[in-house]
Image (spheres, rainbow, N blue to C red):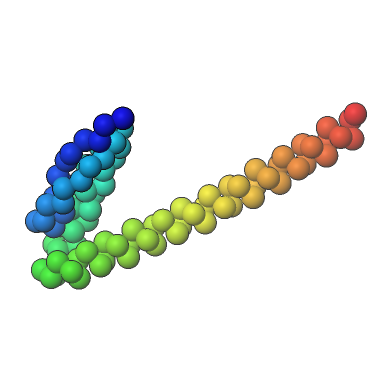
Length: 94
């Protein structure tokens, strides 16, 4: 599949990319979310330094990702426990 050439603008800088057409929408959405977060931090904290703003967005994104990973592990553990229980019930019934 041919790659699509696009430009993503983050914090007033353009980044040329070659992406799969199927990924374009998510890549553009990610850039939009980053820029909205930058604007929000700039307004909320009065910070104009782009490096500080980008660091804050990266930090918050990582914290959110870690929270989601923790929830995912909890869900996996719950499913594994329930499957083991079902397997035990089926084994006893046979």
